[in-house]
Image (cartoon, rainbow over all chains, first blue to last red; front, side, top):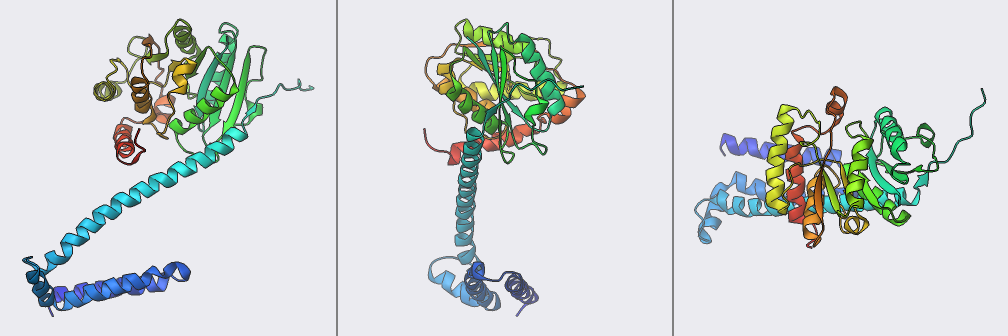
Amino acid sequence: MTLASAALLALVLGLLAYDVATIRGKRGRYLLVEAAAFLVGGFFIAFPERATAIAHLVGIGRGVDFFLYPIVIWLVRESLLSRRRRLEDAERLTQAVRALAVAEARAVEAREPRDR
Amino acid sequence: MAVAVLMPVFDEVAALRRTLAGLRDVAAELGGVTVFLVDDGSEIPVAPDALPPPTPSFRIVVARHGVNLGQGAAIETARQIALADGDFAAYVTMDSDGQHGAEDAVALARAVEGGADVAFGNRFLGGSRVPFVRAIVLAAARTFERHLTGLRLADAHNGLRAFSRRALERVPIRQNRMAHATEIKQRVARAGPLAVVEVPVTVRYTAETLAKGQSSLGAVVILRDLAQQYLFGEAE
């Protein structure tokens, strides 16, 4: 194992440990997905020749490219989808805030002159 | 017939009161003025008691956004309330931060009463002393908007405008922040045959209004918001 592989594995393990320690409860189920992804990633970091063998099998030169291409495609798509979701959420918030503002709109009323 | 003024406000009560006092002074001349004031989530809510009381020709309707959404969102809220409130001879949009004066609201309303559907304020024909950097940014914005909308207007992103009812009904605003100014022109251009004019107005640039107002770098945010609306907004 090279120094780079060891450093990357340490990073992966460190991230996973940190996430497990800081995220708990029902909302942390996605950690299982993260752990599975990191396990696969860790395997190919430790044994890069396996990744290269698979890449060659499907006509891609380097093992790392075999992972990079789909990851970049996925990240671009995910980024666009999350931006769209954020805009949709902002629109819903706007509609809710506006509905309340419209319902509670009031005319300023005349005031009694103040006693001195 | 009376005139409606659509006015957003955000944390600027002193300037707001001056602006409202100016409108109250011209209200009778306009046959009545109703200000649809939308407090866009000011940290200290605008208290109705702090506003000028109504007169026979002047009234204020106040609404409040529970959170700050942006100037475009506040104008849209005011637009919806004003359209539901009744018929007005003209619907004027203007800022509350002291940049815009009541005399220009009168001129814009008169243009609509005279037959225009939409009257856009033009600060380059009035007495505005536009700061150099702002003038350059506005020139770029004007060129951009001309390409985008096809409307041959001399000013860009000027909050002083007036609409007839039929025009205002066709200009719903989806852009919550500053890109609404470009969106309004897009919608006017697409709304079919509307009579569009430009009216000389004066935008007052003071240290206070420049500090409070939109920075020239806001142009980047506006472009981003327009691109997002184009990419992710509902198809029309």
